Amino acid sequence: MVPAPSLLPSVLPTGRLSAQGRLRPDLRAEMRRIPNLSNGLTVVGALAQTFGLIALAAWIDRPIVWVAAFVLMARGFALLAILGHEAAHRLLFSNRRLNDAVGKWLLAYPGFVPIDLYRRSHMAHHRDEMGPEEPDVGLYAGYPITHASFRRKLTRDAVGISGWKNLKGLLRGLHSQRTRGVALAILATQVVLLALFTLAGWPQLYFLLWLGPWMTGWRVLNRLRSIAEHGGMSRSPDRRCTTHHVRQHWPARFWMVPYNTGWHLAHHVDSGVPFHNLPRFHQELVNAGWVPADLEYPNYVALWRALASRDRPVPLARLAHSA
Image 1 (cartoon, rainbow, N blue to C red):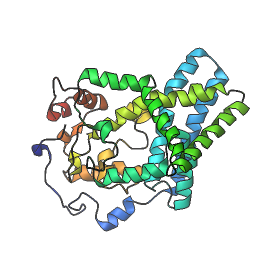
Image 2 (spheres, rainbow, N blue to C red):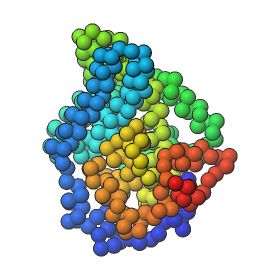
Image 3 (tube, one colour):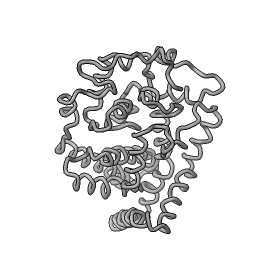
Image 4 (cartoon, rainbow, N blue to C red):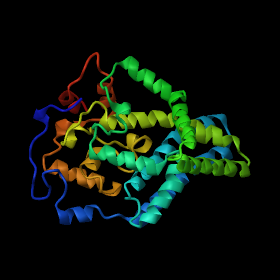
């Protein structure tokens, strides 16, 4: 899955980019500026979309609406997770205490994410992708795989097997002094959510439209996004060898990669750039010639096909021209 050397032009440094692909200091300071007010509105919007969907389903109260809401709630967890990821990088708000409070109590803990533990492991991921301390290597190592193996993984996600494994890990955290505090905080947040659903007269919705989608549909989206970011790549100081880039289209941005997280190569070149500016930063890399057209997958489906193509591998150059 790693691009051939012929697809990796050596064009850095330039007048605007350093040898590592980062912007020169004055441009970098501008690109790294955190838009506090805009991010605050974004958080409110994410919560409104997520909980508003549940409220709408309860108001309409029709079987087809319950099914649609169950499916769409996977996207709700994607919204919370991506903004929680931004908070883990301390890019959501310039005030650290506000950043961490919102990241924990409004984004991460409702989505069962121990954000402090996640932050430490995620920084290890950024320091050395696919290195010896890579925390997520089990999620995207070994690609490409066969179609049958790919189906088995997604089936385990869709029916709740992977979700139950994650939930058991959280419960086991109660028995460790190191993780007990954060496990209790997450469980307390879930109790509050259940209490709010109960006060609204719909306690069953916590299980139907919160816990259920988290254990099933969200697990599918999370795997599909994660392997599209790093599946089959290798350890390298060149981020083009550790991170895929996929052309962004609105259906994927709506369902799976909201808040510009699909510009993931740019994020790994400089993880201090807030999500608002990732498309701009990526364009700088393209303009410099560091990300040529042949390095870009035309869509996520093309990349997933390549990731499940052990029996019949497809060259990246061919995929890049198949849009």
